[in-house]
Image 1: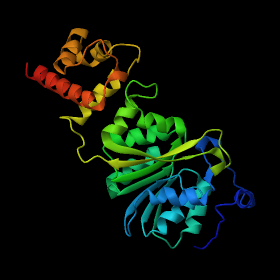
Image 2 (image 1 turned 180 degrees about the horizontal axis):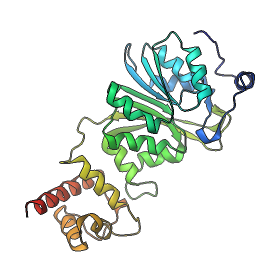
Image 3 (image 1 turned 45 degrees about the vertical axis):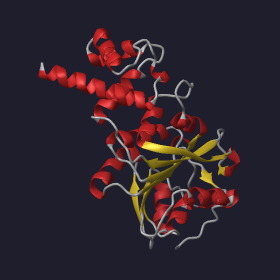
Length: 289
């Protein structure tokens, strides 16, 4: 590396940024993980092998990037902050790194279409857009063999939530539909600099071999979104918006063996898959008629 940075020292990082006229930007959710043991453990969870392709979101000054590259991986890093991007270029000028500058929500699809899906994904994701990034990629069909993401603990709870709990949502079902999920570790605010006001949790996501298990993924996602449209409403009422009428939504639900009076947060993933398939059959039958 052309430039050496002490990733474990908040004092060094603060001085480094000041010397370059740079500052942490709260709007980008920027916090450096200054716990070296945690950094190693997170990258260990990726199960990297030499030559693997990895996407990293938000490399910052490259503490995790350095760890990933040390395992022999080829990294494509997405960085929105121009200052950090310039430092990344300087630090890793002679390494197996490609840098994509700009908002990842606006740049990743072009990268995906041109370069294909990498084997691994990693990100200490900004708290304000973490769910949007994960949901956007799953909905678009981009699934990684393995991913490790660090997010606000509340977001992690939503990802792994079980039915009939307050954290269970359409986002929970979407993540569990696409991946097998395992918590890796919790990270208190003191593991980061600047120290955030929230705790974080890392989650490992392993691509489900049986995906998508439904007749039409697009219909599954339509059913999922409509089901959680208004949590206090019954499935019969929520699904009437896409079924055409409440009587048609009741018909679809009954054909799936689901009580129309139930609410979305009570359904399991398997029940959503069954419901989506019955809805698909219903829509196809209406087309024929």
